[in-house]
Length: 235
Image 1 (cartoon, rainbow, N blue to C red):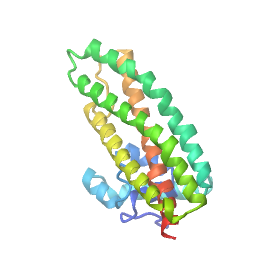
Image 2 (cartoon, rainbow, N blue to C red):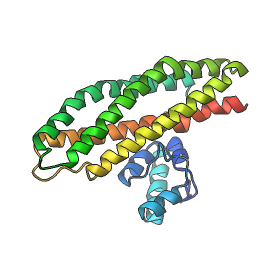
Image 3 (cartoon, one colour):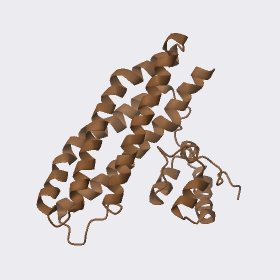
């Protein structure tokens, strides 16, 4: 079987070319958003994974997927990609963050005395909530309109502003990704204790879903949207 991907393939490029790889990487705890610009080999060594088995599974999944073509955001119009990010991922966060917050607080109040790690989950989650809410507003009211304007008319006047906006967004993505990783570590990979109540389990399940959506969201921006815009800058 032809090896489409190797240990030297960049993680973000793999997910860009083959989005289904995100599921495989998530199961192996391989960061494909903030850590997307490094070779797969580094993640394999860092996590102590069986590189040969991982590559075999990855390339097998890729070969099978060729018979089931899907949309490719690397080729879609930039405006369509931005609309997808806002209507799918921003909408999810704007709904989920305020809805999940009281559950995180309730679990801390009820179980915090016997599970002190929950205070750290509460603190990190609300730091993440605040950062993301401000980040979404920045993207929708400033960065995204600027990016689309530049894509239509890549003038020298707004080139510097676009490059600065993208740098700021990437830094904020890194900060959000780090907070999400801390929450995963604190919760032992979102694994509730055996005696956890229904609300306790609900919070962990929804935190896991939040991570899944957030990493896909950041990937679409860091590894697809921003490189396409910056390519226009260099053109």
